[in-house]
Amino acid sequence: MPLIALPAHRYERQAWRNGGGSTREVWREGEAPDWRFSLARIEADGPFSSFPGYRRELMLQRGGGLRLHTDGLASAPLQSPYALCRFEGAADTRAECIDGPCEVINLMFRPEAVEARLLARPLLGSMLFFPRAGERWLLHLAGGQARVREASLSIDLAQGDSALLFGERGRVLLEGGGELVLVQVRSSDAHSAG
Image (cartoon, rainbow, N blue to C red; front, side, top):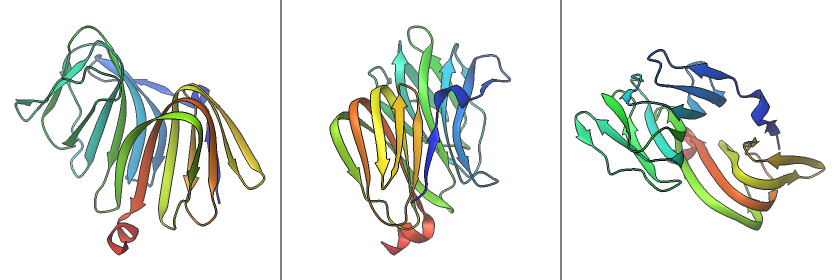
């Protein structure tokens, strides 16, 4: 089973064109891309870029809270860590920082290519993954330390690091302690089949 280390020091920071923040891309798959996982720092209120054909999930990681205005409607405020908001990439979306800058986790995916979701979990000890064909898991360690093991391969994760598992067969063991953000991605064919 392929297991790819994605250390935090390799995430390149890109400033937003509107000057309101920056993004560090962790992983993208496909040319379009089919899906992308990134970390962003929102410094000021302002509009989000439009991504027609994508669905988005945004999770607050830290900061004074965030409210999204999507097509003129305000979301419930994201004030606690790992609070989540889903919206269409083509929607007219504007971010409002409630009490200063925020750091967020961003997932974008094309639903005709993949089905994806963000999950936040505490990591207390061990967790097993049994990825299936057509399935990928991105493990992002938001806090703490962990080790990912698959057969004879082992990857150590520190805060901010990630790892990508491509589903085939076998099992993957994650051990450690901290805060974990997971992205589960299944190809649309695998999703409709089961």
